[in-house]
Image (cartoon, rainbow, N blue to C red):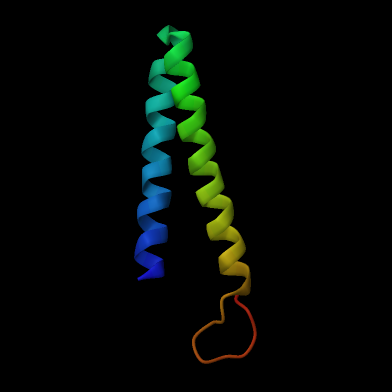
Length: 66
């Protein structure tokens, strides 16, 4: 389940980044603020995923995945 949630979060972040590229040229101040908040959330999710993958065991092994 965690892998599916992570995949969804990363996919949403990728879509958000593509949307940001499209709207940056003509965005209002309010739109930029909203976009910055969503990009911050996506970055936070990505960092959380990266950190959790560093300490997650690989299969039945006792050592973390690297």
